[in-house]
Length: 244
Image (cartoon, rainbow, N blue to C red; front, side):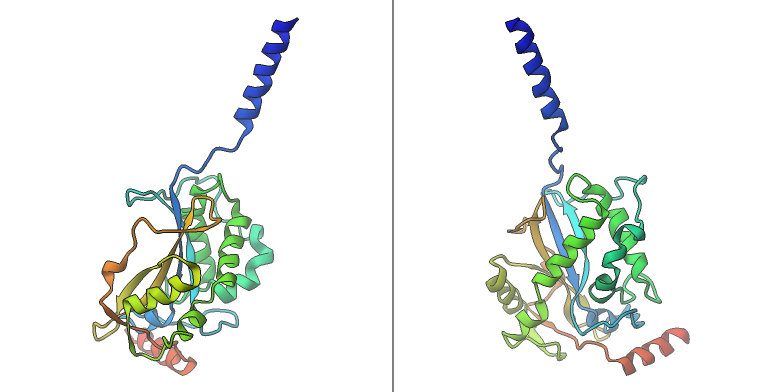
């Protein structure tokens, strides 16, 4: 009888272990936002106005799983591709905070960006997120962090002026406790400018962590904070593009 009880206990224990969710097989996340003015002002600038009532602000790029060795998983599951019906309740917010300003396609198409982000990155994090929670988590972090206000409070404004790279990083670090990574591109004159901000999260995307590595090598010690594009300049950009 005792033997039967022991065997039964071991079977139940194995079932509990096997039903436990597998831990993420990557080390951390990058959460990335970008500044639209750096696209419109770049050598590869293509600046069609996005859909929705978009304010002058940083936009979400995505949430990307990373390995500590500098590589990352991508396009992990072609059986669970992006389905907009699974995020239908989030679309209005996504159109305002996760728009595409021609950095990947021109004219812009937010749905293409959302599809790309889930198919490339989201399909590799399904031990942590389903489609809805992946996009909702991005929106929650965007609501939590207003980079434009954080920088403005330290006198760093999108006025086309030059600001110290360390000055920008320290302003954000004082707010969240961890230094960001800053990625730059170049304007039409070759001046390095603020393009994307990288923050690192643990592999469950719960807490900020110190970044193992960041893309700061693309920047100079002083970088330009380009102006946010105005509607009249958008029209000019489009006319130039259509004539090429």
